[in-house]
Image 1 (cartoon, helix red, strand yellow):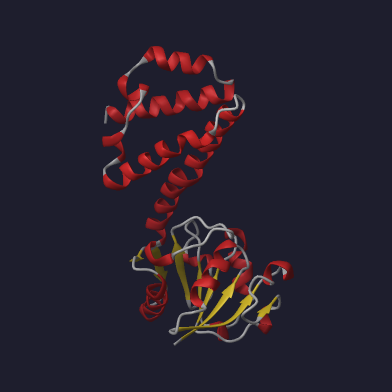
Image 2 (tube, rainbow, N blue to C red):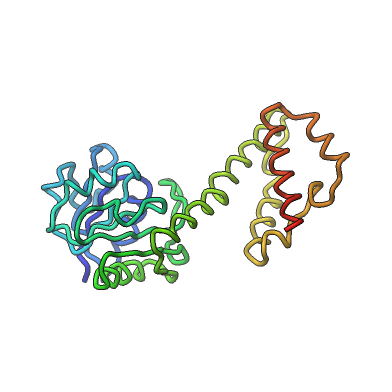
Length: 249
């Protein structure tokens, strides 16, 4: 059985907490956070704001912001076992402890949305083979997709994740605003959103690209530009150029 501690009280920490509580192979010994208010959500386990009060653990998952990883882990002790951060962008050496690792679940997390970890990829790295095996055993209790990935590979995976998640979501927001200003329901786009997402699961994105930029329909593209704000015109032109260039590679 793995004795587990969690550092952090945000979205990922909360979902990990909920996921490990029923698992027989993992004993959650405590949660460390800086905010007593958010720690109230972790009401089935010991919680503390004091690193010295966090119980001893085999594995401590550090689910905090990237900038806080170094400071937080410096305050933890050898009794907290293997320290593993959850960042996609930070290197293994963001933690300076001898026993250090990375346990990066590739997903976006919101506290109010339920999470099924079964198909969420976990990307793992550790300073030693024994600690990698510990991380692998932990992650395998949650997910069927566990991958070894070093800091260099993970850097590019995280970059790609920003494109398909954060940037795409911002485009959803732009579309939402275009329709909201004209009192057109955004949910009319939902079947299109779902179909587009399904296509890139089944095929290469370049193979399923459609639309005026793909067809070279300059008349439609100019008409689109004429009804947008200057800021949105720049986005539209940039993406149109990217689509055209993609067809030529």
